[in-house]
Image (cartoon, rainbow, N blue to C red; front, side):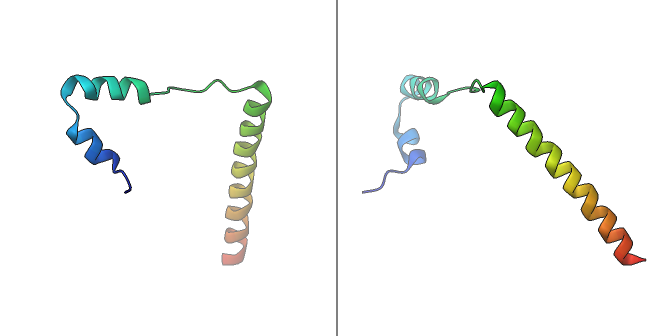
Length: 62
């Protein structure tokens, strides 16, 4: 039988619900410097590609 998280939460008493939420909140994860650089490179790539697409659309409309 598959468990539904909403059903499980609705069956918990208030103090059990607080404990459940505290256990399941993980917060932000620490990223390595290499991963940060990779994510910023991907963001930069997306911005550059968006600029190129806009330029191509403008040129195609002329």
